[in-house]
Image 1: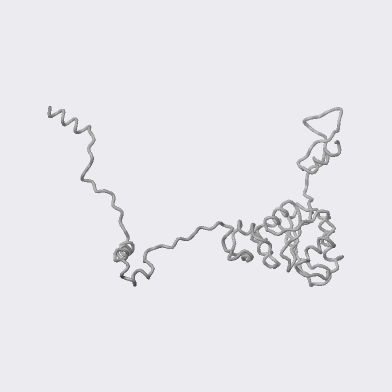
Image 2: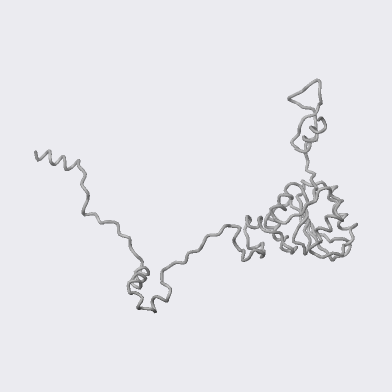
Length: 249
């Protein structure tokens, strides 16, 4: 019988009463603050002072909300990270726009990004900045663009903040010109082969279509050859493919 009891004691579960329970240790600052609360409202000197050991709660901010003290204040490009800088507005200062482009494209390590300084017309009253990707633009269209801005253009008698509107309507020969107000839109235009123009004193930029990257020409289809019908195959360029469809339809 004793042997059976010993076996039951070995296989049965018993709670360990000798084990020390979990105790949450408090900091000395918390103990002091609790003692101050227990003293009651009679001790006015203790209740008026801020409690020691209480950490101030800092509300987390989104990346786009950092370094923005007001709705109309534009942050310094050197103080923003890449994501916040893309979402920010373009500056009226040509120097700040140049710094933003250099930071976003990691210049001068990125050699295929061209940053071109120029003056509007023969006079040096209006300074501009052109940004484009070497290899994605048409050199012929680029020459015509800079000739119209530097040699053939007469500086207009207009205010600085309205210069982009005057240049877009009177001086640019491009068939597609758009106003750009954020660095995100400027990067999208530059990466697609357009040339973005910044002018000193203007808080908006101009995106001029200068696409001209190398692509495969329309050729005879190799895998799907036909006897009757057009001997033209699609290429990797979407505009070329849509032009072929429009011609047939």
